[in-house]
Amino acid sequence: MAVQYKNANAYVCNYLLRSQGGQLCQHLPADLIDARVVEAFLAAIGPAELETWARAKHARQQSRDATNRAEAQQVERLRYQALLAERQYNRVDPDNRLIAAELERRWETALRELRQAEDALALRQAEACKTEALSAEEQNDFLALGARLPEVWQLPQVNRESKKALLRSLIDKVILHRVMRDRITIRVVWRGGEISQLEVEPRVHAVSALSRGAEMEARVLELARQGTDDVTIACILTQEGHHSARCSHVPARTVQLIRQRHRVLHDARSMRERHIAGWLTIARVAQSLQVSTSWVKRRIRTGIITVQRDPHDKRFLFPDTAESIAALQELKSGVRDHLVIAPRANR
Image (cartoon, rainbow, N blue to C red; front, side, top):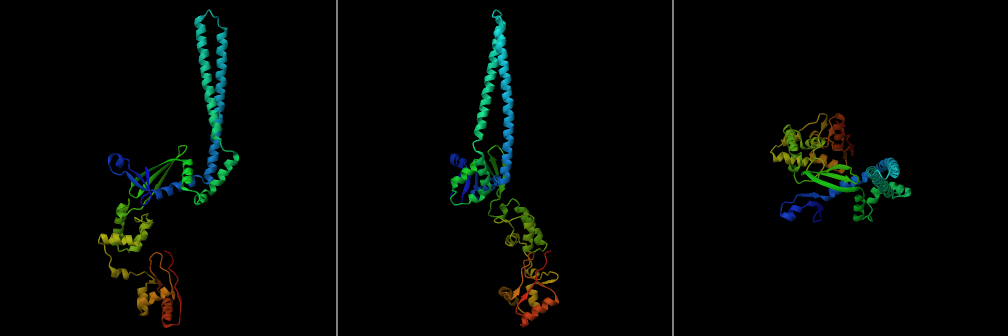
């Protein structure tokens, strides 16, 4: 895939478009994918992972040592067989040509097998020496750097080329595939063959483009027809794992738009009059005090009445008690100049 820097950064697969005039294969948001890959890279070189890597490296070294010992024993066995074949050939009577020829053939075969085993052992030992390029001090420095790498990654002097080099030191390739309009799978192939499966959810432009968009719309209509208000529906949908096209939760505005598009309208009067047992809304407080709702709202806004919006209902609620009404009456008459309303306990 090629990188496109026009407007927003993107990864594009445009081979068919350029070579055959076909359609664009994939167009994926690069910044979102890059951030997810970098997150996986930094997690892979954390202290715990580096210690695991060190233990795995020690285990591989022990395995190599065992293989080298086995191959060295094989070389010694083949060397003994070659010497035995040589002695047998030297002892044969030259007049027994058939026997001499057979012993000579066995000797040559033993020498050939010995040379192959010696070459394989020498090559393996040379490769083992190359893999231990870092000294013990350098390895300790590298392990210490791993814990600081997330901090180092953000430094302005660490340019894009350096970051790419760091990523390529552990990552062989990254395979991208948009399985749905709002879901992209990322396969990180690490050097050594290990594979990590990741996933990102890019923003889309409409609820209909969400993989669970139809399910979310049906749920909105179901709850709305039961008389549930938009704020409560939004909270329920967010708790059920839904989200809007542009953010990680479901706003009440999204619920309202879905409901209105399907012409499921709320009775505004019944919504205003919705009552919560033991609590008064601003409208009911104003009715009890025989003042306007603006009178109550202005005192909340200026801090004369300290009250918090209910986290579940999203409205200002006052206790429906004689003490609360009396305190509000004192505020109205001027006996009080400030009133604090305790919030409703979480349900």
